[in-house]
Image 1 (cartoon, helix red, strand yellow):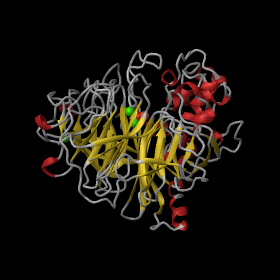
Image 2 (cartoon, helix red, strand yellow; image 1 turned 90 degrees about the vertical axis):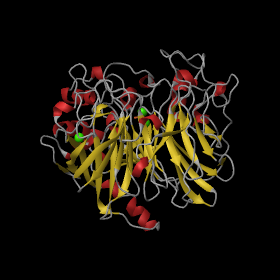
Image 3 (spheres, protein in one colour; image 1 turned 60 degrees about the vertical axis):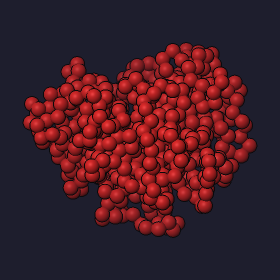
Image 4 (tube, helix red, strand yellow; image 1 turned 120 degrees about the horizontal axis):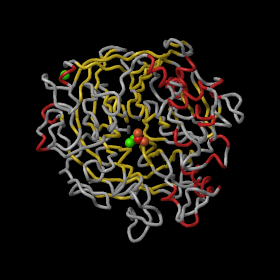
Length: 587
Ligand code: FEO
Ligand code: CA
Ligand code: CA
Ligand code: CA
């Protein structure tokens, strides 16, 4: 889910893998340097105050880098100036405020959290050493207060109307922006993921159809953990049942136009979007590949009606920024080619030596036309999970990034884990999700054979290489770095795959960034490039030949820790509070 510089020299990165570790530090290979590009709270707008942990305000946070940066993109500007865009996925109040009382957050704390969500656009000056933040007219914060335009076939639907927006076309804010992608036309796509934690009082909704839909999207119970509903009725489903339908979309942001209104794209369906990545097809149309990151959820793709226009004239840009407004939404159904009895749930390879098979993309809707019996097109888009249920899509092990290779067009999906597979009457192992109680996840490789058909195989079945229930692309497992819980993927200029992990220490080591070649004798040779600090998740990798950026999200978030009891002091050391940051690594 990151950009690759086409202009950089094709040198590739040569390194000796780092060892799994539990350091409170970013560990990089011998011969590499590192530096902090930006931390939560660093000023990014002119006049923004310096960060002061003990004097936070909503007004300051609106002008500073947000919390828990996940996806990161690095785009060209001119010369050594580059535009970095970051997602700020969620807030962890007990790490943001000393003495935080979860039963009684103050309005000030809640407003700081609204401003800490969203995205940042930051111009960097690159060159020797750590890229430096520049106060530039493109710098921008997108928060839960930023106005968005709703576009595509469900824009203006009754399902999206609220008392604050009777048109169903205008939403304030974005949240839970996890991963994302850079489009061929230079905009950013970003996925609204874990929205269900933010809406209160589903229990008080009486209409059975509304209640069933909320339930399918994980919205249950009474008050929320963050208690925002006390300060704005839009978070209270008993008062605004449609507000939840206005989140869970792919958003598009034009980082080159600081006045532009970002967009929510209804044509790409509503679910717990990890992210979206676009590939230009042979006929000039574009496909966006997407995962719904929840246990037993689905993989989707969207194919545009219109073709991409080359060049970056104003006309071409405007046209390309409308490509995701009309097209066809599909969901994936997989079939294995090995006998079902050979898939025993342990991860043991079937007798043909591969977890592989064929599959199809099942069309759910095309603009105003629904292909799902009993659902209107608007319902298909707003409740895409229910549409996918109805057509028998394959329930996957938590699809995170789903990203097309820029050269081959093969699609790589990180299926991060699924501890519930095969338990308590839940779906058991199949050839694409071959382990029950799957703690370590797998990486799937998919090659389309037509618009609606594909072949697939598992490149990696992750976990301890000494565990017979793991597979590293057929490579000698005694030579690989152990990898678990793949989350984000990216590609370098040589075409190798890079993977970051979000493991909660499933292998008793810090998360990291890994490289794995896809072709030839090195296929499956996983090598760890770096590790992130204790309690942090590695995400948002940007891989260029002479610069790597990685997000270290939620450093120090371990059980029992808080701002009153920090267990990490990264990145500033001493007795400082941990701060989510972007790290640069170079030789
Ligand atoms: Fe926010 Fe699916 O990771
Ligand atoms: Ca097989
Ligand atoms: Ca993720
Ligand atoms: Ca994750």
